[in-house]
Image (cartoon, rainbow, N blue to C red; front, side):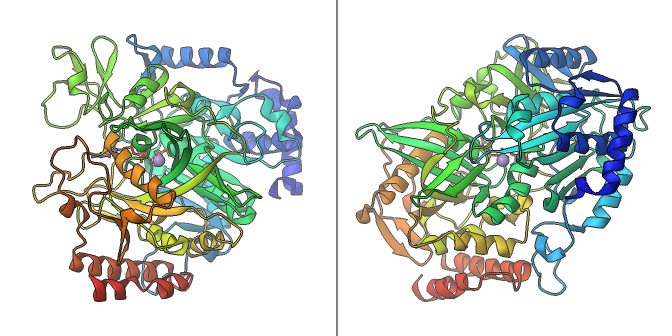
Length: 633
Ligand code: GTP
Ligand code: SPV
Ligand code: MN
């Protein structure tokens, strides 16, 4: 391990001597586990902060940091709620930046597949370890000058749980610290629990040392031109520079719990996935089933995880809204934990009709980033028009006066709330169960305006892997893509892959074993539109009607499905549409032959181009989906 290399031992000694000149404003360096001291020493030496602040996760710490942020103008207290704050970022730093995200390994093909010659790969970006290190060393050299380095010990998953993992994040942003406290479990207990375990090394800097070189906008020092999010899976290290937004800076989330964790999962035989986890209890029988669903960013995970059912019979409870760590137990049951501690959810479109449970989750201890503010100390975004006083003055996310009906947006389309998961009124009592919950079904989906039915079921586990590999979706504001183009997002993991996607698909296939209880898998699409561009399906709480069909299939009901060339479709009338008025079933479930032939050929070409010789051919061979469509549709 690199930390043990002699030069770092020397640096460690030097820094320990030098630490006398770096005041430790909180905590005791000498009380930290040796391996953490070494990690810290290396980065103090590189980043040259003004002071060190070792966090303990206490309430007093939150108060102190919040107070500082208010004083500096980064946070505005929202007087309509308890302990809620508004934050406006530099408008140049508003979303994840996929084009600046890299995985560094010595062997290129450990990270990216062997693409077809002449093709530009889009399933992950690789850099040689040495090249990435040079870039890191040059960008981070002195990057915290004049700033405090916060040391954040955190756990992904319940502290000390058998499926949980520990991380330590260094950051020069106390906004990031506040958000990490909500999104992960920050505690001084981590130092004890760490013991002989390894930890994920997370280094984050806004990239704006003092004296600043670039004009600071909204008290949000950042360096958008030089954003870099680098991962070193071999030594479980993440280095993020230049951005303070969401997944770019809260390193426990996408960087750790998906990219690095997918590599750990490959090595240890489990799965780290971009999936929600929810429980549905049948109120008649009392039986509860859990499902996980993988949709690309801004495609409905948070909303589905928290739905308020519109048909009687189910009690829904949320375990997680974004990431699932999945592992088969010794009885062959797939179990899932939510490694996160909070929700970082999209705000536009969220209201008391579409997602009351989210609305009720952020009435306390929450941070709203890049939304509009109302004159009474409340918040506003697109979709909340019916929930605010019509005459109230509004200030948009850019700080300008704004009125409903004006062109442009009041809130940034990727504006988000950050709140503790425990505040959700339907949080599952077992959401922190260290063993996880048993999973009956896996669901894939995306925004597919045409051709793709509301729901279909895969023939088998292996076919489900193929359906997952073919996931596509309209691009959204969650990353830097502009316009609404349909993009491939296999397994909803394109931006979050930690290693070669072909090997990842093989790892999924290898999960299937005779003594395991393989969950059924499905594909859903809430976003099909009619010829006028209107959604054919009401979505949101009504999605429970689809889940009801899914669960009846899981219970073995053969009478409600018909075999089609793409998978099992619901038999006409087998989804409960009571009270919905006019639903155009035939349009919602039609499989246009030309669409599907084109789609299959295009998907096959995409995977052959992008995954090349790493693609597990067995999927095509066994499933001959194109042939079936040609002959049977
Ligand atoms: P990330 O946090 O980026 O991973 O997003 P997510 O997958 O959790 O998506 P989220 O639930 O936040 O929804 C994103 C957007 O889609 C919001 O504007 C929602 O209002 C909208 N949305 C969610 N579910 C539905 C649905 O069933 N139908 C329609 N029409 N829109 C939906
Ligand atoms: C996503 O894009 O899937 C998110 C937001 O959940 S972020 O954490 O910024 O990646
Ligand atoms: Mn997400």
